[in-house]
Every structure is written in C-alpha cells, then in structure tokens.
Image (cartoon, rainbow, N blue to C red; front, top):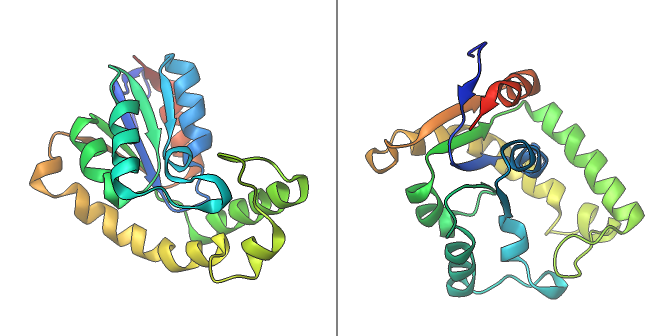
Length: 183
C-alpha cells in the first residue's frame, strides 16, 4: 500500500460479500472525493422486497452512471458489464468470514430492531432476516467463500484489463487506502 497520496480513480466500483462494508465505504469515498454515490440495492429493490425486472434495473444503472465521477457499490452480476466497462477502479473488500459475519449480524439486528427504512419502504425484520430461506445471513453463508474465489478470476479476464483493482483484505488496508485517496 502506498504511503503518499494516490489517485483513486474517477469511476469506482466496490464489490465484496454482503455485510463487508461496501455501502459504508462508498459513502465515505463519495463524501471525500465529492462524487455521487450509487447504491445498487436502491435501484434493484422495489416496494415489498420485489426485485426490479432486469431491463428496468439495467436502465436505472445506465442512467445513474451517466456522470463523469461516481462510486457504486454492489455485486449484481446482471449489471456487472455496464458498471465494470465504465469503471476505472474496483475495490474488492475481501475480509475474513468472521469479520463479515460479525458486521452483518450487528447491522441486521440494528436494522430489524429499529425498523430502519432501507430502499423504497423496505425494512429488515427478524423473521425475514434470521428465519427464512431469503435470510441475509444465509445469503452471506452461501456466498462468502464463492466471492473470494470468483472475483480474482473475473479481474483476470481480458475485458476487465483496463481496471485498477485494489484488493483489500483487512479494514486497516481499506482505511489506509481511503486516507491516501485523492482525486
């Protein structure tokens, strides 16, 4: 990791397992660099946890990325081609299972308890979050190991060779990258 200030990119995509801190980091980057923050979950989820149709989701993402400088967070494969073809930098939050699980449990408990509105009126609740087949906890359990293997392979594909990939394995690495980030 560089110690002096570094150029961070103009169009940054953040990927990583559910609960790794993608949105939190994206908000910090957007504020620090004075760029727009695009949260893919907000474009993907309709009211009552209904998934937007792929063509609607893709159009929303295309419109959201129309600016010259942005940071986007999320892992949706159905829009990866749109985002990654325009991005110049990818941040891969590749944290340990236990760190991510702890963050996800705390976040999910807080959101469920406080009934925080997420996107389009949707809220997490205890039953959905912990005791259903659609549980965000189960999703993390299913995808954490897969993501750690999938993303490095995707980064090696020739169509993504234009991307500057920053592989962040520990929160301290992420904090250092953010401290040194300039535009």
